[in-house]
Length: 205
Length: 205
Image (tube, rainbow over the protein chains, first blue to last red):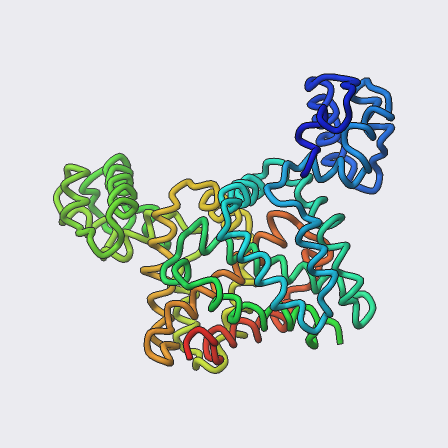
């Protein structure tokens, strides 16, 4: 989220104030939750926030960057996605398991758990679903779309195992699973994710 | 929960009233959440509810039955566990997937989702964790405890995949995963569960 949280620092001038930034983010959150990512334009957000579209671009950059800022993510998704992009599909299972499980051991864990719990409680569920579908999963699905049409289900199965692991380890604190060191757990989970990504799925045959 | 919800019907006499039953359940919930299943006695619950222990037995049966009643489960866990008990370990993955996923398609779905969401929100999380650990997982773990000591992690990995699938399909409603027919999804998930239950787990070698 570099720079986004403190828009005033990006240039010497300050074309608005913090209230303007907050107003744009509020408008973006509402729009993205109601209409989904694709149907939202920078102009519609600007109209709702009663500012000039150029100001939205100035504060938050592209529509994708505005969307990411509106979720208030604890981790920059592009940091994760860049590393997955550099990984060939046949070793993505281990790469994803290692990346995600290590984020949960970092200082970001509390924020990740909080976001997950609020999604489960029904708060901002549309926003979070759209984020998962439009930013995270859309990026990976085309790379594992074999046979054609299976990519989305494949990455959503991966998401299901990761969410369940977060729930078991960091919400319910099930012992002994919560005590297994991350390195060992990566080795246990990676084959599951790899099968979902590139293995034969009965439903797709 | 046959009979348990309407204690007065079990015999011709009515040694208490509905308030007594509610008071016992309230006391049981608090005790099981604070102390865990093992450390709770019928006597301690009776003391807290200021009733005779015999009345607790009369209303709710054994400690296990009292615990199940105190969770207010939408499904009788013994219905599920009895079927798993009759299944050999080497085909348990498919049996569990089919049982659980079909419950989610039944009229009980809303109650299951509500229970899961309240656990994720932190409500009664101790109660629900203890239920999972002491009633559900303890029953299956000894049957897949190979090598010795791996049984608990194995069943908790199964629980993680099932919880994640519930979250993806019935809380976040991720499409297309939420649209996959149950029969197809059982075939996709069963090999994951089976590997967790009886496969080689790197951490256990």
